[in-house]
Length: 73
Image 1 (spheres, rainbow, N blue to C red):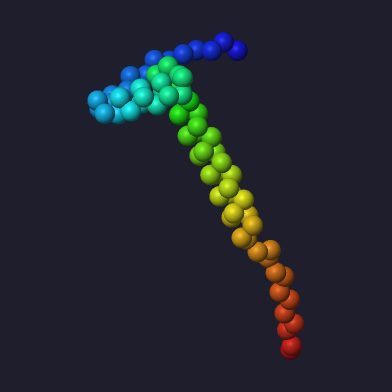
Image 2 (image 1 turned 120 degrees about the vertical axis):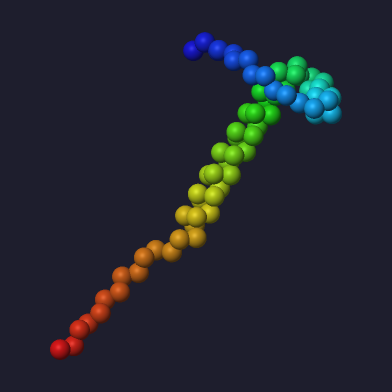
C-alpha cells in the first residue's frame, strides 16, 4: 500500500516550537518525523489504556449467582 502524506498546519507558540525543535534535534529526527512519532506514541498509549480498562472491568465483575427459591403452599 502506498504511503500518502497529508500536510497538517499546526500553530505553535514560539516557546512550543523551540521546545519541539529541541526535542526533535535531541532525538535525531526532523520536525515532521518527531511530530509523527509523538502522534503514534499517544495513539499507542491510548490503546493500552483502553485494553487495561477493559481488562480491569472484566476482572472486577463477579459471576452471576443462581438463586433458587422454594415456594411453600
